[in-house]
Image 1 (cartoon, rainbow, N blue to C red):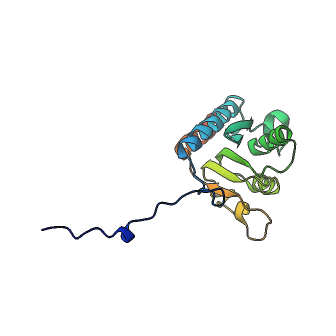
Image 2 (tube, rainbow, N blue to C red):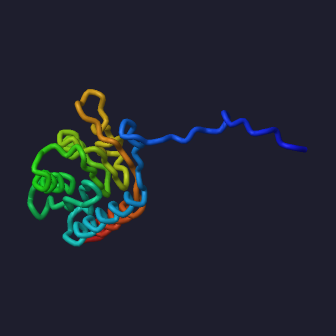
Image 3 (cartoon, helix red, strand yellow):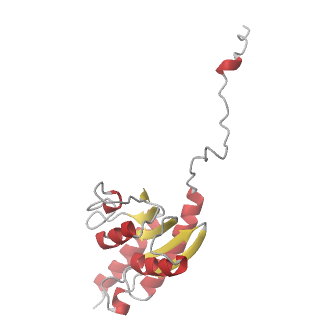
Length: 180
């Protein structure tokens, strides 16, 4: 049996990208895993310092401009979460409080305090490891990062390297329960 002649008008027309039409944004999950692994390194530092093991990095133009881990006990400051400390570093690095072209990688879903600060800082995208169904501010308890009444919304990419993040947290709290 012979094939019917090909209809040239039925072929898809390739999309051309010009200065007038920017290409669709591409989320590189390989890069997400790399930057999350850097956040996990910070979380490990928190674990070693006897802090709840949460780590964060802030990325701008493919480079890390801020890194931090929880330091609540060390600094005796309830606001010394990894995200808050990383935001302060990023403000200094950028020279502005607006971080519209920055992405935050954090090993655990941000709490409502941190989520509120991320919205105010205009962070473009939040990538997190494990979810926090009891107290998360990115969908666990409430989604402040995309709340319709707020003036800024962050893009969300959840559960990048979630098992590794969760294992670190579970290990930390297992040791805490066993301590005398």
